[in-house]
Length: 162
Image: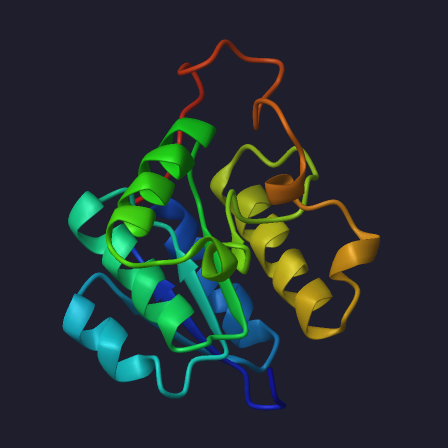
């Protein structure tokens, strides 16, 4: 990611509403959309793609397009079950295991984030870590096994996605 960091946020909802101004506060340029045509149009300049939606018709195609475009940072929010479903869709739709290795999902640093603002901070911190080459020195949720919210019963966590 260069100096003028272009961040494409795919999805709406509480996390997108908080993340968008946080991205701008860093001096980066956020674009927020739920439209696949807009995703395709923005990929040529996107340094990061953050998928926050939980819509099958949007998530997989947006992730696939970002990975195919070689976007430096691609991450997706969601439970382990959601990630497994997306992974299956991506593999069934031409994404290779090698390409999937670049996907950060579940997205964010492992700081115990639960509320939309905390989740946005977690995502933004991971993006900074990747941009600065420090991602291996910090704990990402995507590299940890087990439940995202280990203190809650599976399926009981509220996901503030769009």
